[in-house]
Length: 508
Image (cartoon, rainbow, N blue to C red; front, side, top):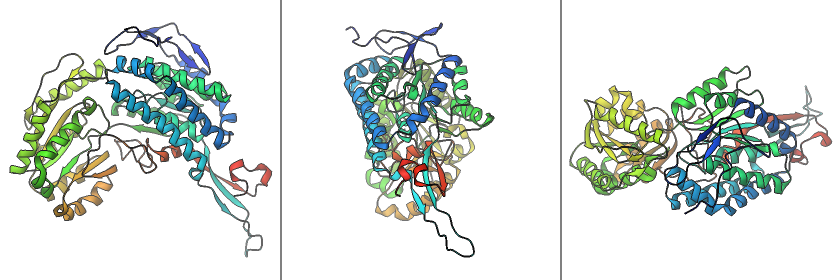
């Protein structure tokens, strides 16, 4: 079957499709490979200069006009829905249903943010009226509001080619805040990045905006990412990816003559605490449910619950047995890239070669396939070896057997920052859960009871972030309407006449 969408293989820089001298070839899971231009620091500079030029008019747009633009992007993405699914499944190996769901999440996110900025509460507008007669000193008129910060750099994520990539959460949040965006596309899905960039370009034209509001620079070597985070016109960075890559970019942001915030979501192991009463009542169902969550999307979710803390004894054994049976019955899945598949195999090898770890289910893989794997260890070994608490990106689970809930609480204290922590509990576990909660609250951005963390609701209340290394900024989220606040800063206006006030502060 021929592709209905054939990429032009170029970068989009402020409304122009530009080639560059070097190219790279995509590595699709199925179907046709295509050539794409390699990003360069020169192109980054051109995009950033255009973004700064666009900032003045774009940040001054009314909230309604900006909301219309976000909705127009969503419409343009939907209009290309079938082609996006076609090239997205080809490049990533993800099933069509998953990509269609992810497209819905991407457009839903844009429309939610549009509704949110129309309403205006995110501006946190405040007004202290003048008190000219106050003794001993009068008070001037004071007003405060959140204002957009300037051009934002966004790094596309490998595991969500739509929801965390070109028009994903970081881009949607920055545009909603009033900030132009320069995206560094991910080389795992350059064609998907390009067709989404075409949709954004069409929305910019439809709304009559400055073309510098959005640019896409396709994958390049490290010098492109470095040029982007260190460009003097970039005011903040949104990133979803590995701890190593994220930390390197974070350090570059801090080393700039003018340091800027780096909002990196770097992944986590998302531990699940199975409390005794729940385990006694439904060990097999919990083991099976956990296996389903572990293997969803070949385990390539940032919220994949890679570690389960389970009490020793017969009920714990039943949990492990049920998880093993379910994982054994799960067919191998294609991973997003050859590199991710190799990293998964290396991570598995670390467990296979570990003297304190028992392989419950160990399945060999070659190429881009990933089979589910299950390992078991005890609390003492887990505490001793920090490698066991590091994320293995893929469908690999580790069960840590504990003597009692007191040992669970001790292990909770040792945890690093996480995106999520889950408690499986029944009424009889309330006391143990109450002891755990104050510790776990400090460890994660989202706490769950009796569910599984895979899947993140896009909503006002969602927090997708957490203490380091889950993210580089514990006060922020990369999902939900609160994510817009990352790209705003408070400004106080003292004694300004009405004519000088920003539109949104007039009459407040």
